[in-house]
Image 1 (cartoon, rainbow, N blue to C red):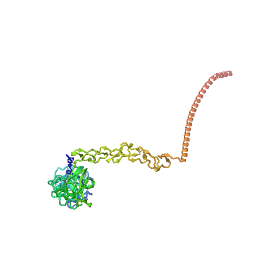
Image 2: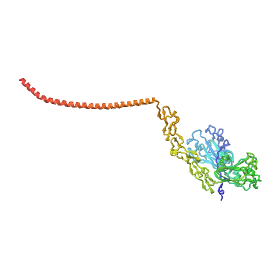
Image 3: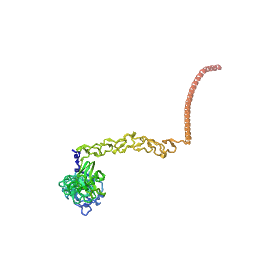
Image 4: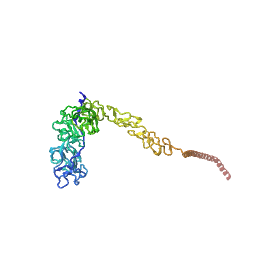
Length: 601
């Protein structure tokens, strides 16, 4: 089987995204049990004002006290597809918490979307069965089920089936300060700014607000892709843009409703189909109108087909996309129909374009531009991240957004940090990031930085700091990890971030590459020498004093020992002499005594 035949017709799927407006603003509203004669009517809930959430601010709906049901209807004026509903309940401008008196009144509420004013005919968007006074939110956003359409938004609460839960108030109230309904202001549109028309084959021309899919198709049709054309033919829905993606091309005339027909006398013609998401595309098949006549240079529609272009884009603007084909060489005799256009790329919108805006036109060209497409088929893989026969092979891991060439699997772009046809090579050579286009910083020893985020895993070269080692040392620092302090550079300028040298000289009194040496101007030397001499003399004096003190201390100690010795010796001599005298006197005493005795006689 030819590989072309293995790809899926992508015009069978759909998806989108959009933004919405408040379609309930100032629409007619009515409520059950209004308070007569007070400025609290139902219209207060749709007036766009909710800066004062009290009973006196005139911005809130208030119902009578003592009823067991409370209902408020808003008429949207027509059947609309609703995205979500915003409700702001009365607070009296005090904090909304479990002690607030109105939480009990809000509990148990429901919101319906209906085509009549009876809730029984509608769809329940929300019914509170689990909130408590502590958990019920205010304000709150309510999302209705997908593919829900209606004309009336109905707020409802009741206390009709006792026993009433403990947190609930015994009566039901509206007390809505604002109710906003978000969707498209015109029925039959969807997408960004509600700018894309729903398929004419959606029943009632209502489609999903996000992806444009029909919830119900008109008889004879099943879910086709959403298509659009710039100048539709007025009052001829059977020639609408979706005819080009309905799968029918058995009758190529204007009469059987299988071809797009654009308005006459226009100088540009544009048509696109929304694939719903960005997908990998292999080729595009185009069948142009022939009116079931032979396609040759005599066919009137060859001149209208000449000069056409085909784009693949991620937006509805062709200039944002990739040009797949532009006819610059065909003639009425050579232009093929049908034709296959190869376009190995990825995108969401396939755009057909032709113009007659720059005369003179080549021979054979029609004066005006037309669409007149009977069928456009886009072939590719319906799931992102696959390629090959039957789209069964996964794209390489590091392909950007999972997209690869639908035939050979080569990546159509790589995620950051990788290069190569398979995106299996990490950035090197001092590069990192998307397409390896970013340069690494000053990593330590000029190592490769992280291939994805560019960080230096092992620090920085001297003179740099930061995760990317792209910041030079500053703040008077330099060197490895900016841990060294600059010298006395001129005017205290930053020194060289790597080696610390002062590029513009030194402050007065310093010299050297680092301005760390003190300059000698003569007086400085004398002062220095005098200082050194003074210091030296002081040291000598101190040493002499110290020696003197030691000597004097030793002399005192020696003197003290000598004095003690002499005193001791004298004491010993004195004691011995006295003993001697006593011994010598003992004899003469006796002698004197004897003499005395002799004298007496």
